[in-house]
Image (tube, rainbow, N blue to C red; front, side, top):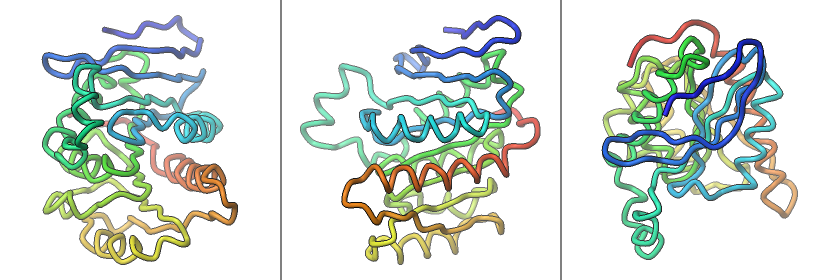
Length: 226
């Protein structure tokens, strides 16, 4: 499915993303005068709605288009929800990331915009693995996640990458430091999100602002083809 918008207007709504023989569901927010587009996936099922809303608000405030999508079809979800078997299937998740990337680059309102990845949790490692294979990706942000599952692809990532973790997540800090040391881009950074409130939304807002500033800084020129 191709997205069509009138010249000079923004667009948003649910869209269908071709991923080989299946279709993934995505939600596109395209503000007028968008300066870049960020592909966002918070979890495998794309079900982290409160977090997704916060990410989209912060990114839109920086004049960035946002494509949120889930990795699974309705037929695939029940099996994953029962066993979680797809959560760390990096080759499978990578194919879905790259399919969403190709879809975005094929849409006339998006194809000239610099492109970034924003991922959290189980899909973050797959985002890095995909970025290693997609020269169109100009910036990456990963919030939490087992980044070491990206394996040797970490050394191949060339897009500036921001790794975000919770201030109180001491167990993840060492893993993030090791991942940062392996990333191939010298401009990659590790940032700590403020989570002083007891509820997760404070952490979501802090992390989203860090991500928005990163993308505003690095999404600045025309993407290459994937």
